[in-house]
Amino acid sequence: MFGQDSKHRDKKTPLSDAQKQAIADWLAKMLAAQMGLVPPSDVEVTEVEARRGEINGKALGYLYGFVDAALQSMGQDIADVPVGVPVLYHVLRQLFPGHESGYMEFFASHDRDNPVTLGMMEGGQQFIDYIANPRPPGYPMGFARSISEGRHIRETAKSDEI
Image (cartoon, rainbow, N blue to C red):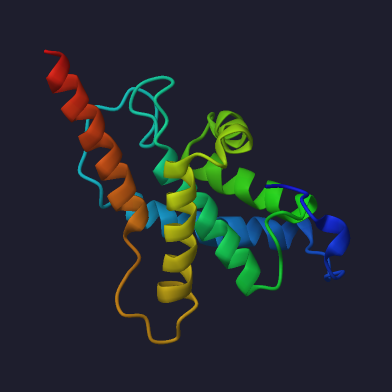
């Protein structure tokens, strides 16, 4: 995840704090637009954590993959700690105020979980297909879909308990 293989990378022009913040703002706006299309639901914590401790790994993985692909399209790398950590942190802070540290910790301990990995692949691919593409075939909706699917799984499990 962060800092892996850093000694084998070419030196890149460092981004200023203002540039990192601008990238985070841009990405958070795109992801917030997707979140805005998710139908309202009974959420105790955030859109990706319907109940405390029940984090939707696929949705957070999507967010990570989307940010990673955006940074790669700019010649940067999410694994480069001085770039990846602040950009990802500020995206999380804008989307889920007060939960950014917990979700950063979630990434650090769950980056190899299947739902997270699948979300990462989808988020990265959707950035490439819809944002980096000069003629996108539509709009990226994977973040909204992952949130909705996570809620459906939770609601199905909840109804099975009854």
